[in-house]
Image (cartoon, rainbow, N blue to C red):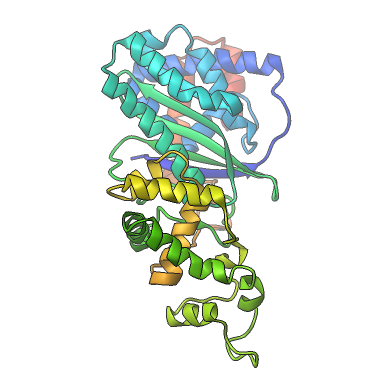
Length: 387
């Protein structure tokens, strides 16, 4: 079962040549046709949510296997490949890279109207799209900025999100996959099959099950009212100009501990090199405005809180750090990526090769290629790419 996944690979600044894109559209159309004939539209959407399968499809269509451009170009090629055949095949693709990603909600609604979907159904799909983007940009703060978001869905309402973020400092990109199957909670462990070539040493992971208490306290803080919340934040803000210098001091400093360090010690928080060192709790009109808005809204749970327009990474961090430092409800700082992007290595690094997954992926791709209506020589070339 594939619900979501993350892949990390090199950041590609080049452009796809027109001749290659045309070829990818042609091959993508044939691959999609056979896959839908063989497995149906819902299964096609599900397979797009599998990062290994998605990467393999991009490789078959002759793009660089480990380049960030695979995500954006493959998505664009598939979108073009099914153009005019959406109703016939029962699959639809909204969004894309950059400015196109911001058109995703409008494209979903547009298709909903064309298909005669009930308005609540279309709005539900829009909500799923927005929440997936919000979670990966605000709740998983791993240093990657989302710049690509696409929403795949079938006529039956099955959906997949493929989005990608970039980290310009280490010149890498990370891809996030979501699938609708069995997603019970957007803010608690929504990702499975997460894969990455590297892991961040520190990443605020508010969707971890270990962040459950932090999520609960964050929701309680905003429901407790604006005055109480700001009072708590003032405790951090009072020492914000001293935080970096203070945290660098040893516990047994001859200069004594500040109120802030005493508070950290009281809560049994490892304060040296803590992420709060990098946080600026100086007065921010925008942050205060959002917090006031959220407190007035009084969300019934953390998901409702995150869904509020304007709630972003800084708001999430402010609430998380207040929950941790004032109330001892610490979040997870472990990068949610669990596995290497590859199936494994012959030297068992990072883990032994997963032959079963490898073989299943290759077998499916070979069978699909054989059933396409492409020229025999083209099939031979594609098989070589797959090998």
